[in-house]
Length: 213
Image (cartoon, rainbow, N blue to C red; front, side, top):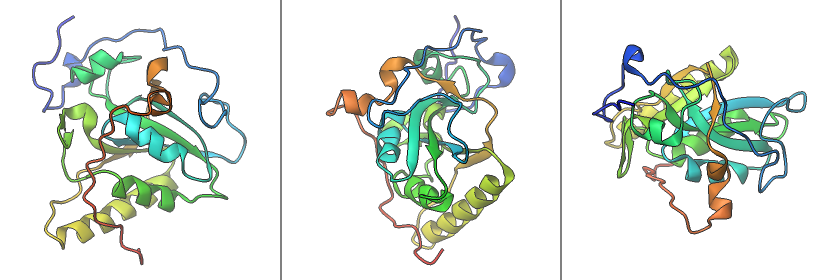
């Protein structure tokens, strides 16, 4: 297996690892919420997939949000089917580390989730979060439908202008339709519940989302 040599650049599709047909096994229930990690989910719920650096800490944030039905960590936005963690970390798949967030829009709105998303990481850093460097750590929103796309683009534009007014770079968050979500290995699911003192990377700007937006 030949791995990509430069994790700070996005790999071209023709150079990505081939992957495999076999999907990762997925635990039946969420370790914290007790809900299923895989669909079918109850009618009326919505899904969005968010990349904000190391997925352990990102998932921990969202399973605590009231109105979130379930969360899971995985890989999205790349080229390699059913990749392994090691493959994703090599930069040879094009995937980002992401969190699947399944939520009840009657209890928590997408805008509220996006505010949490933007405030809890630094969306201006390109292919990194803090000391974590590589394309898999990029800021990303993978939407399920056009209404989510519009909401994500509005939120990104609002926060980008707000940050730039205070001397930060523009938001680099990738906003794209969700093509595939590949579940990560079982030991990654709800990792910080199982290992409470485990690694968290929240390279936040510390700048609140504009309240009036």
